[in-house]
Image (cartoon, rainbow over the protein chains, first blue to last red):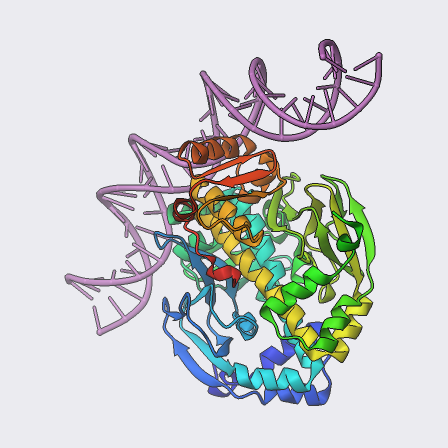
Length: 240
Length: 240
DNA sequence: CGCTTGGTTGACCATGTTCAATGTTAGTGG
DNA sequence: CCACTAACATTGAACATGGTCAACCAAGCG
């Protein structure tokens, strides 16, 4: 939680380099992108639906949910974004937000001006490609999310989500492990298109079957293999 | 249905130009992209899950569904792609297919080699930007799809889908109109995460309320305003 | 403490599913 | 022009998954 680390784009560079080739100069361009720091309290929306935006939001710490909502205001979370992610990188291509962003816990955002990004991609095609690929990987996750919500029953759905987050948090969950996932059961409900009550029952089921224990923002994987099976999880779509 | 038109990338250029600025040279680059023609019969998959792909598929005519499937093989269609679309443009950045593509009716695909696309975007940043934006617009639709499947009831869900397709087909459906949408009720079920039986009942409801009539691959909009209301439809996310 | 947020429980209920039959349409060959 | 077929659409009855509502519990914090 050092201040210095929160304000660096190093995790962004690391992520880009994990899937795209960047020369030293290009890496420096990423690291030297100007940022404005924004601290967001838990449960606050920091990108509103319909808003036109002139910066991309990098998650330095905390957790953010990308969401849409129906006419009654009921939310569907369409993505969780962990530190290192840039939830609305796509805003660079489409500045009118059609999804909102909410902080699920206290979160530090680094706002990167579109202007600076545009300049970077204009001068360095490899940077453009890395960011484009980042957008595409996000979309691949979204497609699986739609599948999860549409065609899996509650137990499978929740298990799948836990598996995805375990891998994306880079938790060393090979046989078993624990990671911080600061969501409430209501957030899980919004992500899985269920009610909080049913999420609760489903989590109790997973606990009872000794697959995973989820409570107060922590996930404990009890049996990684059986959890993956229960969630029909195949990490291929995460490209890791 | 002239052969000449089926084999031209003009509709792709038109689409790109509708959202991105392209100079004359850049436009020519698009039009001169090499293609291989592929005719696909109805109900055939032409991009398999897990396959590694070396070309992007442009839809010249017909209709394609992008899909994922759960462990039992039940499909979730995550996007419909109409002529002019390029369903797996993202494969340029991520060549391992994590979604499949199926032809819903007899379809003509123009396969554009990644190699040619890579060369085009390497030489013309504006082309890269246009294609990147195309990917992002696709992802925006996907996010709404997840919302639709997750947080709307059956009637609203189907109505929303019909509205989306009406707009994307560019049907002049301002007060009322008809367009060809060659899907079966089973396809609609896979898209809306319902059963074919319930799709049938829902369509009958829409017909009974004189909102829309759907049958045998044709959609007749009876009351565009009320249909949009019923589907909670706001075209903003389509950026048109 | 008492308030607030989040988690747990129970009884009842509704939306949409399942399964299986029947109707309809368009296309094919005699 | 009609019989035959295959694919698609429609219907009904029983059922189940998950939703709703309302209460209660537990932990953290001023």
